[in-house]
Figure 1 (cartoon, one colour):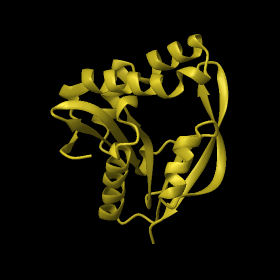
Figure 2 (cartoon, helix red, strand yellow):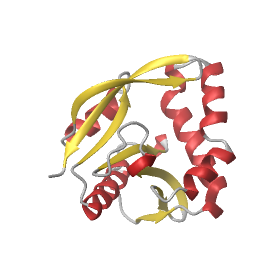
Figure 3 (cartoon, helix red, strand yellow):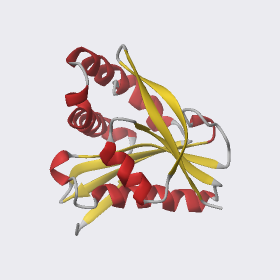
Figure 4 (cartoon, helix red, strand yellow):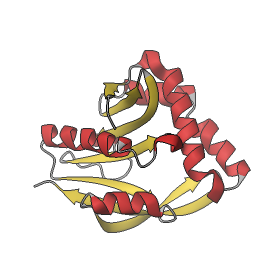
Amino acid sequence: MENIELRRVTVNELDQLQKIGRQTFSETFSSGNSEENMKKYLEEGFSTKKLEAELANKNSEFYFALLANKVIGYVKVNFGQSQTEIKDENTLEIERIYVLKEFHGKRVGQFLYEKAIEISKHKGVDYVWLGVWEENPRALRFYEKNGFVEFDRHIFKLGNDEQTDIMMKLQMK
């Protein structure tokens, strides 16, 4: 897709991050989860307090994908002790890549993914890892296409529902 701009998210853009985060997460997962569990997760996972802390964390970075100055997606990467599970200094976690549904299939996700890989190369990590819900075949195919392989599984709690994420990694060295 032409004319997509990537820009690092600042704390002054917290409202935009909260809005795109809630909207894309809801679009992606509402059909497979209860309304109650989605509401709870959206309130907690994208609370102002939580996002402020994440934006202030020097070991996490968010980037917006913009089209004509409209936020259409974002990526969040973590390194060092900010990673959600593997806290190795030589790895990078892609915690989130989300794109508005109307822009699916238009390479926006690939553009955000390439930004994460660029960061991982700059940091010289051994590998990049992430977790994908086992019931999200679209995301699983996306990461497989980009060379990721399954190496483990873990539990992701959405509201009161314990779900299984497939953990995948891409060797960089």
